[in-house]
Length: 327
Image (cartoon, rainbow, N blue to C red; front, side, top):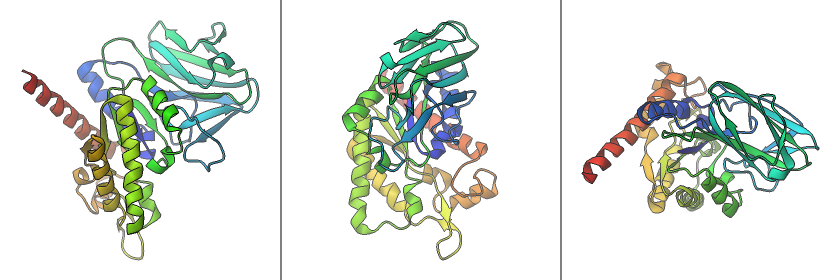
């Protein structure tokens, strides 16, 4: 499973919990996708430590001064000069598949072993803490990330969250390149969690609403083609003060309905985060209960766990219903 989203996904509170729940049920298939470096300081994959030198982080949410490709998750790390380096420390076993623009321009090293040129796949033979290093030997080459997989039966849940992301931002990707890059991860299901950033820009005029739906339809259709199955998690409640008391952002219901229609047209399943939380102004109650942060947008560990568990329960219930019909 690949989980595409914004900061609510990037902090790994929801995705890590879904991963743990499903891996406890079906087995640990691996950590899944990791960016080559942190695209922002709010990207927090559990148990992963990064270091790097000489890399420029660019993504679909930046000003359009850098052209794609941005890899399967929407961010790239460009070598400012020959000899730029990156390293990732993690606890894992299995294989590491590296995603780069030019494999011949990247050397890799595992656990202080020898440097290897043009080695897009590494093997972690033993369970434990490992250090993977990358050296880019050509200015301008791009690192995207790596996929960590055990190669044994189990579940993988990729955290492909990107702070400030939106359907409009992701449309900066070259669609053919992006679909191929996402398809290379071979997800059986893509989960999309977006909309929070759109909701912070004020009311959405009627004239702009068809474009909002169209941008989400294009995104949902692309991920469905890449994976064959998609699940849209509608955005959570979020509140702001706009000439009155703190209350649900006025644009959120508009965005939710646009996403719902786009998902149905694209053939994606829908899980209603907003309704699960309690609808309008639910974020105010969640904050009072300690389930939301003081910005009335992001979730605490407790709030994220409730959403992740509910999504996991829904997936498992759908699996049970499918098995019952198959009998």
